[in-house]
Image 1 (cartoon, one colour):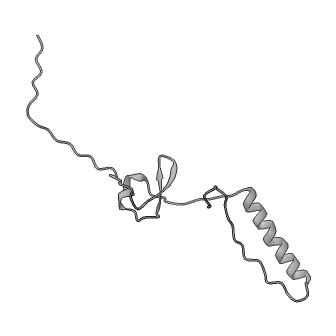
Image 2 (spheres, one colour; image 1 turned 135 degrees about the horizontal axis):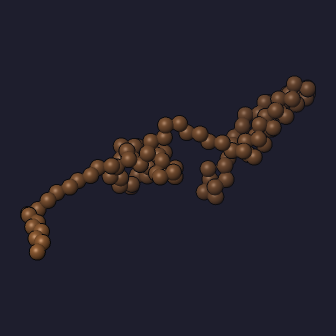
Image 3 (tube, one colour; image 1 turned 180 degrees about the horizontal axis):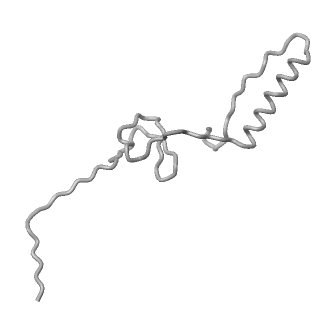
Length: 97
């Protein structure tokens, strides 16, 4: 993806022969049809994407799911994951009349 959100697809097209034959033209047409289909219906399916609960264990550049949004682990990200810390100080007394 570029900064403007445009998806760039680089496809491998067959090398043109010195004289065009029907097989080459058919290969070219199939590849162009595939590119056009991908542009009309871009599909992305990432299986087993980690969640933000373990983002602190990921490497820079890894993808993760944060509440339904795909995020990229950045170098300066500070992720606490799902750690919970509790403490207590002193005693609390509650009185009722």
